[in-house]
Each structure stands twice: as C-alpha cells, then as structure tokens.
Length: 393
Ligand SMILES: [Zn+2]
Image (cartoon, protein in one colour):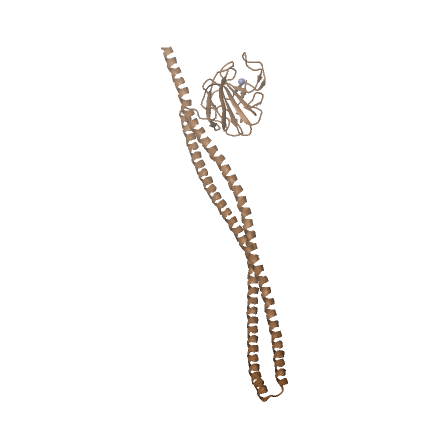
C-alpha cells in the first residue's frame, strides 16, 4: 500500500515535472521564433535606415548641384535679356539708317530727274539756239558734283548701317552661345532633377518599408508580451514564479521561496574535492537546493547550450549582453532549448543531482567567455544581486 502511494506520488511528480517544461518549452519555442523575427526585422530596419541615410546624402548633393545650375541659369537669362535688348536697339538703328538711306536715294533721284529735265531743256535750248557748248558741259559737271556729294553722304549712312549690322551680328552670335549654354544647363538641371526625383521615390519607398517594419516589430513585441504573460500564468499555476531581486546586472538563479536558495554549500576557488572526480578549484558556487527546485535565468539572453556531460551533468549555458555568461549545472530537467531567447527571472530548468557531485545542489557560474577558466566569483564580482541573508557553510 505504502509502495503504491509512493509510486503514485512519483508518477505525479514525474508527470508534473515533465508536463510543465513541455508546455513552457513550446511557449519558449514560440517566443524564440517571435524574437528571431524581431531581430530579422530590426536588422532589415538598420539596413533600410542606412540606405535612407546614404540616398539622402545623394539627394543633398543633387539639390546643391541643381541650385548651382539654377543660379547659373538666372545669370544666363539676365545676360540673354540684356543681349536681346541690345539686339533690338541695333535693329531699330539699322531700320532707321536704312530709311535714311532710302530717303536720301529718293531725294537724289528726284533731284537728278529735276536737273535732267531742266538740263534737257537747256540742252535742247543750247542745240536749238546754237549757243555756246560750254554751258552744257558746265551743267554736266554741276550734276556730277552734286551726285558726288550725295553719294558721299549716302556712303556714310551705308557704312554706318553696315557697322551697326556687324555689331548686331556679333551680339547675335554671343546670344546664340548663351542660348546654347542655357540649353545645356537646363538639360543638366533636368537630368539632375529626374535623378533626384528617382532617389526621393526610393527614400519614400524605404521610409514606407521602415514604417511597416516598425509596425511588424510592434506587433511581434505585443506577441512576446502575450507569450510572457502566458508563461507567467503557467508558472503561477505550477507555483514556479520567481521571487527575488531584479536589481544588479545578474539576478540570483533561485527564487527566495525555494528552500535552500540562500545556502552556499561550496564557494568559488580552491577547495578539497567534495566527491571523487569533483574539481579542487571550484569554478562556481554550489547552492543547497533539492531536486526539482526551479532555476531561473539571471538576465535576458540567448541559450548557448543545453547539454549533458559526465562531470557537469545536465547544464544550461546562457549568453547575456556585455560579454557575460551564466551556467547552471547538475540539473534534472531543462525548460529551454539551445537558441532560445530568455528573459530575466524566467524558469529555465529544475535543479538535480546529475554529473559529479556529493548530493543534490545547483552549481552556478558567471563567465566572461563561454570557456573553462573564464569563470568569475559570483559572490564577489559585484554583478550578481546576492541575497542579504546568505548562509555560507
Ligand atoms: Zn559546484
């Protein structure tokens, strides 16, 4: 009868200790998955924001170049307008000179006709009256004199017109040059504007992606919170809720509601080997708790390994921030798997008596590297919030 009760009790303990970690482990898996997604989204977010920074720098320099062309175009436009004014003035001058020339030509023609008409009468008179031929000659020379004077005046006007025409041509050439410079500046500016617009679209797209990623991260974080709440609920249901300080870099690995949590049965450093095969240079501290006592993560981090060796027994090694690691040895079961993300005060295992030891206890280590001889004394390193009621055997 007694044996039956014990066996029932043992079955109950076994079921209890098996079932709880299984539920917690599946939630842990979910949590790790969500955390992985957050990490992935954050990595992408970093990439996106670096890309945005680099493109923004490009946009800045494009904007500078565009502004440079803009002021160049302003100057060109001013110069072109001035040239256009000058050309217009020259055109007016040319028209005026042309008119003057034509008027002079007309005047000369009229006068010549008048003189000829007068001359013809005089010539006929001369012929008919058989008077002196010299009169006729003298008239001819008078016409010539007049014509020469008029011609000189007309040449002067014509020369002036040609001069103005030449100046106008030069101005027009200059204007053509400026027009070409303007066209190429405009083309360049257009090209840069197109490039800038493309980059602005890129930034807009990336910003949208960044926003979307943030929304995803927020959602994932909400999911994490819900999973944590569920884990807490399950832990509460099984009585495995951490009770201890959350101050300091690392928390005490045992809850203050577990008997023996504050009893150090073996300190860090040289000692007499407590059992055959146990070290004489103790790399952690031993806490005198019985098999099945909940063990909690000292800080947030990733589970680096859950392993079983002949000396350490079943152990969990966690990597924290700032090159810190914690190891929990001689466990009876673990509630986490390699790669899991855990939070401070989260149930990770139950203590036991596996590996080399003189009895059930939790061997707890703090390390600066995940290697042998990188352990530091948890009680004196100043990182662990050590219970004030510590008892050292
Ligand atoms: Zn130990």
